[in-house]
Image (cartoon, rainbow, N blue to C red):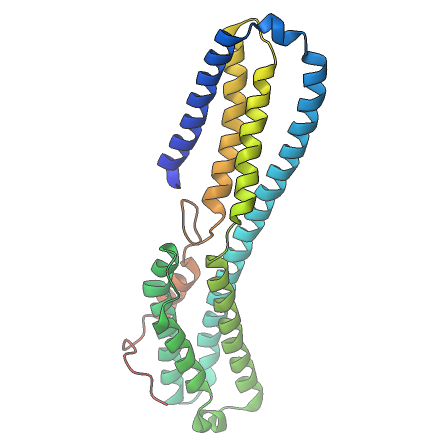
Length: 263
C-alpha cells in the first residue's frame, strides 16, 4: 500500500493497535509490578532496540540509494538521446532525418508505453525494444556509415550503446525490491520492539500512551517510507520520465509513429 492514504492507514493502524495494547497491559498488569524489572528489561531492550535501529537504518539507506541510482540511469538514457540528436546535425541527408526520427520515436514509445508498464509492474513494452533495435539498424546502415566520418560515427554508435545500457538498467531497477524474508524480519522486529516496551511500567496512563504512540509512529513511518520507495518506478515516490519528455519537447516528436521497422 503506497501513497498518502497508505501512509495514513499504516501509521494510524500502528498507533491504534499500540494504544489498544497499552490499555490491555495496564488492565492486566500493574505498572508497579513492571517497574520492579526495569533494570533487566532496560538492558535487554537497549540491545534489541539498537540491533533493530541499525537494521532499519541500513535498509532505508539502501532503498534511498537504489532510488537515486534509478534516477541517474533514467537521466543517463535521456542525456545520451539528447547528445545523439545534436550529433546527428553532422550527418548528411537523408540519413540525418532517419536518425533523428528513430531516436525521437524511441523516446516517444518509452514515455508513452514503457513507463506506464513499469508503474503497473508489467513486462517491458516490446515496442520500446523494437524501437531500440531500429535505432541500431539506422546507424548500422552501410550508406550511413560511408557518409559519416569515422570519429563522428564512433561517437554516435557509442551513444546508442549508452542508451541500450541505460534502458537495461532502468528495466532491471523497475523490478527491484526487498525480498519477503527481509520484510518478515523488519515487520517482526518492529512488532517485537514495540511489544517489548510494554514491559516498562509508567505511572501515568497518558504518558505511557504518548510514549508508546511516538515509538509506533517512528517505526511505522520508516517502514512505510521503505515500502513506498523500494520500487523506484511505481508507488508513491517514483522516477518520472522527465529527461525523455524534455528531449521530446526540445527537439520535437517523431515525424511518424514507428509501426514497422525496416531493415
